[in-house]
Length: 460
Image 1 (cartoon, one colour):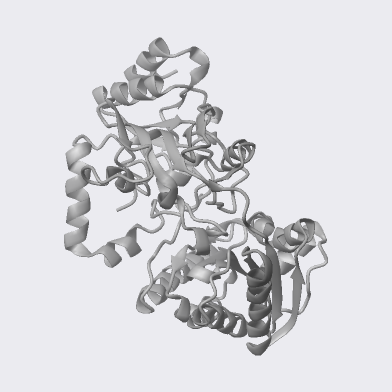
Image 2: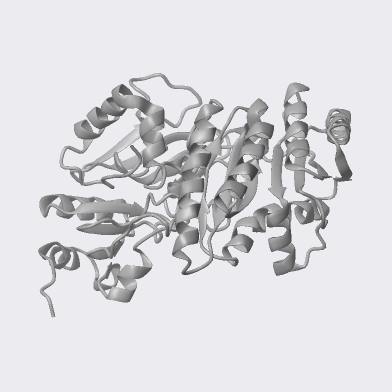
């Protein structure tokens, strides 16, 4: 049996034995996030930290032994940002689940990085408060992971993404030192905005262990849903563009295509419309006549764009039913085979064109591409499915992935809207950022992590 690396011996001496996973099966379980298409290797060990001090000790020991650290939340990422590369320790924050403080008067919450998004929402709701960012994985993804990737969600078209709600954080730096960034006040302009820099940095600049998050009042909203079915993706995209041009800001505007609808219905039997090329799901949450007027306008715009049918709902249970297909789309597609997930974002006016290009790419490369989208802000998720064990199909899928990225940039878009660059988007990010901006990224990385301890090879 090979000798255990010195760093693992040091970690076992510093932490409890149950906090350092060393078995091959245990390490394999933490080797990658949901981006199995991206490169990964079995980590040297997995550390299950429970305190900021333990995170700091792990990072310090890794740096001293020349080992890299890959921070990890729930492992729900889709770009390979939490994939272990060679000579790496995976540092999981899943046990750091305390909601430390809720200040109803100042409207903020302090929570550890391992708190599940939905658990945080439930905790603050008891105080009449609301945390808006709601990635589709909100029931299983962590607040720390959401911050590391600057996660978006269904309601971000109106309420913004994770970065818009992060006031401050506790961070472990690459040398193991603990720092506190940001503020607890409603306003602040002291120094560079290092808090915003850390949000979306994918664990490359520091390990976020606690977050101070801005909250909104829970009340004052009255949700109505409008759902239209369309005979073509182009018609659904035209409806998205028309709603945007009309100046209406829905609280959600989501699209799911025929492949997604069929996968969800075959799995769950929800009675979804068959024969529709796309479903466009929207909500508005203004109260009274304003909300009713916006709902009616969206329904009319959908009809004018060629909707086959439009349905409205104002009862919470019915709204949840209508949106359940959107929430279940990704897991339903995973049942069909390995999924290569795209995360492009184009200008809202370019949504119809981009949807058409995705369809053309599927035909050109003979692959199945299902599309789900936060259509209201142009964030599209083409999901490329290849049968298990079909290497030729996997190669075609990768070529289709690259073509979609190229088309996105050609339409003035960006290669990732909310999942992060991770490993999968490195080539596209390199072209999008350009040499000088990449050099700026490297300079910042070198300044705070000169040894390259934290998540090397990711994000840029």
